[in-house]
Structures are given as C-alpha cells and as structure tokens.
Figure 1 (cartoon, rainbow, N blue to C red):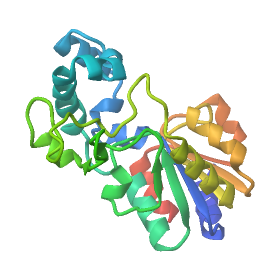
Figure 2: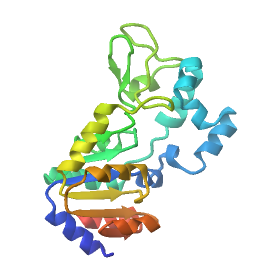
Figure 3: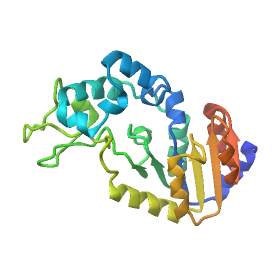
Figure 4: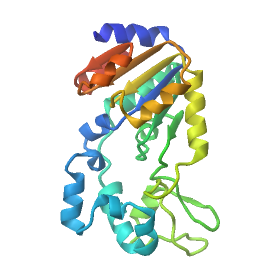
Length: 238
C-alpha cells in the first residue's frame, strides 16, 4: 500500500500506540539483533549467547557474564534510527499514546521519548538487589570485573530480563493499557507473526498499520502495510 495512505491514517489518529520491533535497530548497527550475532559469540566465548545471557550463567559465572554484557551488549548498541525519530515527532505532536518494545537498549529514550514500555527491562536500570539503587549503563561500563553497588558493595543485577527470569508484570499491564487506549496501532520493524502482536488483543481502536523492511504472509491482517527502507518511508509518514 502507499505511504500516502499510511500518512493519512497517522494524521487522522490522536492516540497512537507503537509496537516497535528490532529491524530498524538492526539496520542501524545494533549487533545484538544481527543474524550472525550468535555465531560470533560462540566463536569468541566458546558458548552460545543464549547460555551466557541467562539467569543461571549470571549467578554462577558473574565475572564472565559481565565481560559479555559490557563487550557485546553495552558497547554495540548502534546508532539511533528513523523509527526512534518518528516516535519522538509523534510524541511532540501529542499523538503518541505510548511505544512498546521487547528491546532493552533505551533507544527511544535516547531520542527523547518518555512514553515507552520496554517489556524486557533496560540497560540503564541495573539494580542493587539489597538497597534497590539504580545504576545506568555508564556505571557498568566504567567498572571492571563484577560491578558492585557503591552503597552495599554487593553485585549489581543487570536491568534486562535474562533467560529463566519472568517479564515484569507491571510492564505488561502498562503495555496493555497503552494499547487499549489507542485509536491506531502502528507496528514498526516486525511482522504480524511477532510475539509483540499478542498486544493486539487489547486493541479496541480503528486502524492497524505496519511498516517493515520485508513482507510476511501474516501482514494481510493489517489495514495498511508499507514494505521498504525505513530511512525512506518513515520520514514521509509524519
């Protein structure tokens, strides 16, 4: 479908909920989302990223975990992308109900967006298990070995949801509320078969629009579909 149709949907909508997938971030250099990430990690560390990025590995090998966390996660976030900037423009215009993502790199926050829910936590919400003090990614990067709370002197827990941990129920509730209040659901960077699409069951608004870099057979469920280069499409939308 045409970008003009998508543009008209955005213009007529007043409460837009955005479901943000990983493709824009991957295209702008976020290594964690790239197809060869797992291969590179296994070659470098002798273990799969799934094994390392788990609660079990963190608790049993915290020094090795944080070496991986710093080098492969925090240092390889990539640049901000057109999706982040579009969402910021929607917020500035008063049209954004909120953005929901499974990403934890704080990309929208870095662009100035405040109405976001990161279902899997945030690299800037690392927490002391004892006193609850929060430490951002800069604090973790400035340390060596196992980063510890400067108050309690105990290891900090990473702010992201590791394999074997539960997604915060509060975040899920917030995401459901955002979608339920929206009059338009804008899906960017993923397809209609994504786990994010489970949020659709809370949507009671009008149009569902989708922008992605590749087509998928399930996308026919959306009212409007635009496939192509994010850098070309998104600046034209709003």
